[in-house]
Length: 343
Image 1 (spheres, helix red, strand yellow):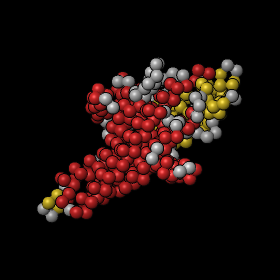
Image 2 (cartoon, rainbow, N blue to C red):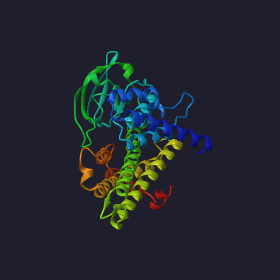
Image 3 (spheres, rainbow, N blue to C red):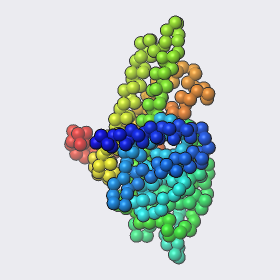
Image 4 (cartoon, one colour):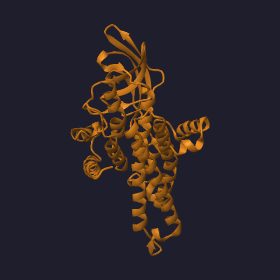
């Protein structure tokens, strides 16, 4: 990374912190207006001459996780918007999210297209302007940009209270909302989603660590801060190690995907490692953060739950750690394990 790029990313990070910090606690629709007005959701969309800035979008996604922003920034910027752009479909001004679905179909219906699908656990599905997914068409896969108002949406929540909706659609949509899918679009969408969650989880884990260090320093017991107790020091050290593992693996995956795209063998190893590491570390970070905080950390009034509940919830989005561990295992067994881990 050049000095100029590092400075630009540093400036972007501070800008993102200011914007996301200002909208914290606001109505989600108003918060998204502020974010969209700064064009932050389109950072990873390729420019007409090629390029794009995946690393920049990842920086903002990490901060959105750290600040527990009540907007699906990572879903929009790292998954939905790039998939829409790659398929030549229009970019919405509102929230766009993406979903993984196995049995969606899209068939011609006059000069329009009939889309049938059931999407589960769609992040912010009811309030999104567009839901992006890949469906099976008559001549191959297609990318669908669905208006949720055409579907039956059943509201749901994950344990963190974030929208996770069931979307059932059997409707005729405009042909302009459907386009031939790029090669391996299903796999790319899954990998993009996994990376988006891994990056956001690294931010949430950092927030849990920072809160734990701050609380351990401020909380006095038996005449001294609990941070002086060896057991607490060990808990903080273990938490810091897990947070760094999450950060390093997710950043490595961002770097590989920015250089090579999402569909190379190295990208698969990097994304699978990042998501598996994020899922495994999330349990440790959340558990130790609550142990350090004690009873106060379990109360609704304390902000710790805003990141720890997200860590628990995001583990299963776009594939659990077990799914990605199994994919890594199959890769290792198919070839030279040492070659796989040293790519």
